[in-house]
Amino acid sequence: MTVDDAPPVFAPRTPPESLASQVFQLLRSAIHTGALDPGTIYSIAQVAEQLEVSRSPVREALLRMAETGIVRIVRNRGFVVVRPHPREIAEIFAVRLALEVAAVERVSRVANPELGARLRLAISESHGAATRGDEEEFFRHDFLMHDGILAAAGNDRARRIVAELRETIRILGPYTAGQTRSLADIEREHEPIVAAIEAGQTLPAQEAMRAHLTHTALLLIQQACAVHGAGESGIGEGDVAAARAIWADVLGWGIGLIS
Amino acid sequence: MRESSPLVGGLSGVKLVRGTLKDEAISIVRRALMAGEMEPGKIYSANSLAVQLGVSNSPVREAMMALSAKGLLEVVPNRGFRVVEMTVQDQLEVYDLRLLIEVRSIGRLAELSFAEPDARRLRDLAQATVTKADPHNMLEFLESDQHFHLSLIEMLHNSRLLAIIENLRDQSRINDTYRLLEHGRLQHSAAEHGSILEAILASDRLRAERLMTEHLDYSKP
Image (cartoon, rainbow over all chains, first blue to last red):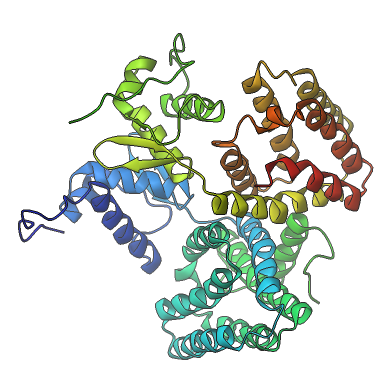
């Protein structure tokens, strides 16, 4: 993160925000890869030193992250990466359900083969990544598939809200290692969503999106229950039941619960 | 070349003394935004605002950064912060999202059962908006209106949802505070709160959602 060359004389001055943005990106990917461990307190001064920047862009980047709930600032000590609680995951998916089911309804009112073709590309890439066990790529293409639908639906704010919510879920990434098989299963649920968009079938499209998000949510909540639980390895019967109870409490019985 | 940053009206006499300074600064700047005391397009510096409030720069700057992250202000590099100007497209997006999220949340509330103290508290909050429906004191009305609506959403115990709805409500008001007044609908809008609440308490989901949809009509661009 050093400045190698002096900028050309007439080039616009780089606004100070861009340094904070770069730090933001670096910290975010460190969280995704698990290099920054949830629960550990990191000092702002140390991070600044490591990145060879002053403290203030680091502070600004962290304030932005704290705003979206990815990190928590610990007064006078530094910051921690926040590991989402099982209930918080249910809360996030409740919002995603509202936004993404509505979005898929909008894009499937008429047959939409162009969008379908673009989404199919993302699906095949994420399949490949899941098979190789490449989580980074898997998440990237999974994101592109969901984001493609939201973008086509035309509400940029909805798109940004979902992208931010996904950031929080993304912190769970390291825990899904060893779960890629079930993630690949869930990934297969993208197929009926895309098929319904291509054919312009609104109700099946909504149903497929609802089923997909519900399955994903339940899986992630179960994993979080297992992590927060008494340290036993793997997902137990108790975690499955607990996840369903949390889901029902947040969304109400009968909404999206699939037997 | 730097023009002096305009002062924010209504802040005189307000001094920050307790709580976390950043949170207080957020609430003061937010109120100034909602009341239309900060004009869209003008650039406000954290420094001059801090001087006005009698505190150091950094909590005010952090507060303005936080409001920028919420889409209410925009960072102007090296100069300060500008009130976001909402285009018609922006307003349509916010309205659309409120129909999708806020109306549905009101419907979901109708499926819950409310303990008597909660029901009483919510009825009091609805009544307060009627009492405060005075066109000469819009800020008080807007605060009580926000308090009533967010207290309803709080009953869903979903902190993400609450934060998103709070932000959408703020965004739909920015640059737009006095529309209720212009339409002469202030009293009417306040009276609707009671009907929405009663539909929720009567577990009538469809009616609650219909009334909330009608209630949002005023924010339709």
